[in-house]
Image (cartoon, rainbow, N blue to C red; front, side, top):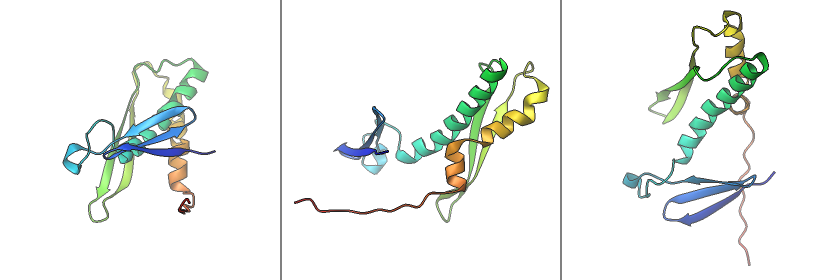
Length: 132
């Protein structure tokens, strides 16, 4: 499973993976063009959208409409480390959402693969070769 990272210019860095190109950029105040999300923003959105997909599958299997479910993420940040300490994922479920599934849909959102990879992180091996 390989991903190619390309450098199209200025502070843009893109990932080519599974036939899609994900564009990133840095904000103007950091020398970028501000034309795309920063990589860290994509990381954070991956957490939310992953949890959301799990909720969609859960609801689809039970015939529950997801159009009125609202999900939001909030982050507690450690300013000394410049890292997030806590990710809060909250769902506002509509009145017609079956009460018997409330805790189950929360547990389902917790199954998100992105979250699980953060909780049980992979090893990172960074190498380089100079091409001749």
